[in-house]
Length: 213
Picture (cartoon, rainbow, N blue to C red):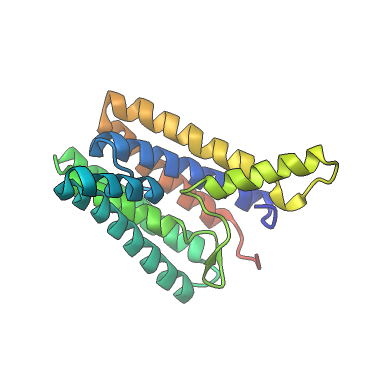
């Protein structure tokens, strides 16, 4: 986070919020599975394999869709270097918009698949030389960096490299809370809000001038 200018940091926070919103909505629609938190899906898959093997296909399918999004995003990012944020966020917005339309039409499974695909794409928005620099859909690493930063401050040796990760976690948590509130009232509301936020992030990315990162 500390390597990016304030505009890109705000974009990262917005993207983390989007991930929380999408994940909470997917969690409600899927009945306890995730559309961006693949560690949780892996754990659920392991438990399902022991208890009810056929149910393991649900988290496995979501993991496959997420992975497909990561692969596609990495390949696309390599081809549009310098404008990959705008391109990838446009694809994320498109996938979430189509997914919301499918959910409105009564097709929750394609909605979940497209949501997971979109979150895979989103993880390539902040990447350099083919490697992710800011993970926006998983927060274990961010919490570790945040904790290390607190420890460094307590020791009287602040670490510049740990700045911003606490806010990243807060953004995802806020998005998840908003998604939960909307989706528990009406799942389509959460899905529509996610699609709308993705469009706003795409517009924000378009305003960020292309510059070396």
